[in-house]
Amino acid sequence: MKERTIVVNGFSKTYAMTGWRIGFACGPKEIMKATLKIHQYGIMCAPTVSQYAAIEALKNGDEDIEYMRQNYNMRRRFLLDAFEAMSVPCFEPKGAFYVFPNISEFATTSDAFCNDFLEKAHVAVVPGNAFGASGEGFIRISYAYSLEHLKKAVERFEKYIKR
Image (tube, rainbow, N blue to C red; front, side):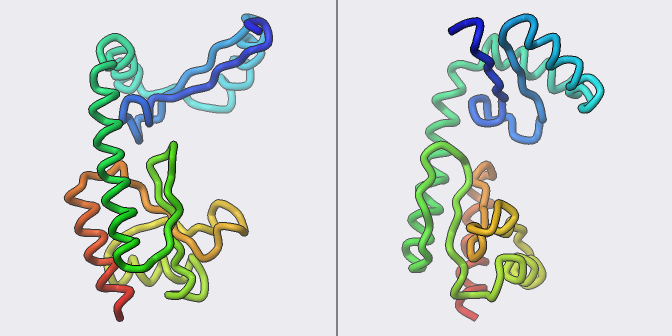
């Protein structure tokens, strides 16, 4: 399989490096040469600081993986429990750090909810329809934020939907 396998990965989830915008690809030499031709003219290179951070993560970050996995799980559970307590249906994610609560009873569209929620509660969330037509009626919330920020956002969400 080695000659037919291409690995494309990043550092966001494994090493809690969201926003660093760095990843990697590896595979057979000929495919990687062709990939480089496309990549070098279509995408700017990763910032130098991100490259050094990625090297450090690969060399010394293995212990941090379990720590961050536990933290993400704690934040995920916090959000899921909070939405359940508010009777807001929310799919339980298994491999991402986003929840996707159903807000269809609070607004006519995901866009309308997000705009109004930002304006009135000062919390930014992503409309579900940004991920396709089946996302309409949902919002995406990242739990890559601190628990403190998530608690504040949930308090504002609950206050907002009670209006």
